Structures are given as C-alpha cells and as structure tokens.
Length: 307
Image 1 (spheres, rainbow, N blue to C red):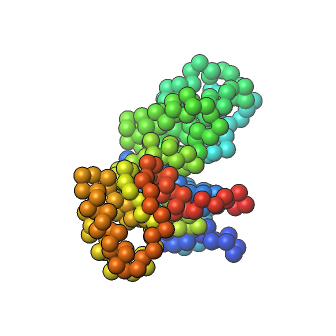
Image 2: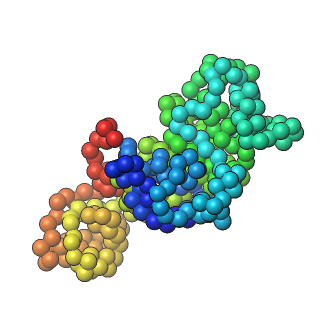
Image 3: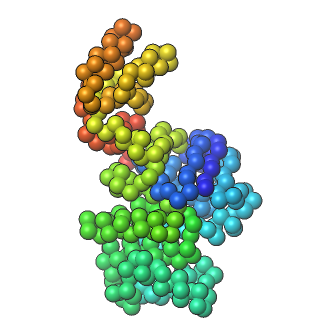
C-alpha cells in the first residue's frame, strides 16, 4: 500500500527525516509513535503532499509521489491535530463546505455527508454552531470531515487530544469500525502509548528522523511478560549467541527473556554468556508494560519541550 525508500527531508541545517525506509500494509492501522521533533508530522506532511521531500521514493497504492500527487490526494483523507473546522458554521454547514472543496456535488455530496454523520454520530448537533459544541463533538466533526471523500488511506494526527475518557474510547471504537468495515488503511499518530497499543495492528517508532522500531504489534508485545536485562553488547557474534537462547529477543540494548516454565534455565544461559564475555549488566527488571518501556528506552526519557 505505502512504500517509502530512503526518504530524506531537511530544513536548513536540521534533518527532519534521515533516509528512512518503511512499508505500511494495506488495510492496517499503523500507530506512529515518537517524541516532539521526531519527524512524525514531516513524514505525514510529505505523504499527503503538503510539503516536498528532498530525496527518496514514495509509492502509495501504485501512485508515485513525484508524478501522481493528484491520484494520491484523491484517495487520501487527513484529520489534523489542529481542528480544521469553522466555528461560526453549523456542523452540517462545515460538512457541506468541505465536501464542496473535495469537488462533491448534488446527490453525491448529500450521500457522503449522510455517511460521515452516521460514522461520527453527529446527528444530535448537526445544526449547532461548531464553536458551541463540546471538545469531543468537535473532534468527531473533524474526523467526519476527513471521511467525506471516502478515503482509502486516512491519516489521523492526535485525533483524541483534549477529549474526556468516554469520548476518547468512543472515537477509538469508531476508528476501528472504519478500518474493519471500509477496509481503510489508517496511519494513527499519537502521544498516548495506550491508544497506540489498543488500536494498532502495526507500530512504527521514529526519533531524530530515523525509524528506530517497526513491526507487527503482536510481535513487539509478544514478550510483554518478560525479564528485561539491560546491557550493551557491542559484538555481533555475542549477540547471535544470546539470541540463540530459547525465549530470548533483543531490542536495542535490552535482552528480553520470556517468563515461562524454562525461565530459570534461560536466565542462567543468557547471564552466563554476558559474564563470560565481560559484558556489564546495567539493570534487570520484570517488564509489565513492554511498549511504554521500549518507547522510553529507545527515545530516552529526557524531555523534548524545546523541539
């Protein structure tokens, strides 16, 4: 569905995307995680044609980004973090206006508006000014506008920011229904790790313009009940020996050992290999939240307020 090869983007002397490679499966929900300034917004902006890349190749549903931007945008929906609504217009008037911008007219426009109203459960406040609606209602209207052109690919940038827990759960259920019923490929950007863990089929972590982790959620979280041994292993040959220990996976500088009936023997084998090769263990802990731990470990726990 989406294939990205050696994608690079820089702003003056700041590299936003540093030659990334990524494939996104058709019909999946891909959670895009990363701290402030990691490159998430730049990536989505390039894929939707808002900004231009410096180099690399992007193919979306068979369309080449350099030659077929119009084709890509015709199958793309975008729900930005900043509310893209007119507060003085009613919810219905907003849908009419943005539908017209998509080039929809007559019965087709009414059909798509009716669909978007149903998807986002907007009927109770259709004729209320959008600026007078609650935060959760405005977010649902924002999502409904992004669905007007019946996109094959939908980009959601922090779609639940600022809403209460009930509205957030409703929107997550709604997004999953869109994915299942419409077979819509969704790229979901969020700072809420629990949301990514709940809704995604695939997870991509990005930091400093590089992909630092990518894979199916089940595989990433398969060792959620693990013993985590933190140790820097510089030698590839030693890494391969440790990987051969049953129940062991390695991500960055962490050795994860599944908590199963063979845990004791597997711990002894892994620690013996580290000891025999003079590898210093910096920390050992049982892992209860694998995704959050991975995120903080791979991106470091330092604040990114200045980025």
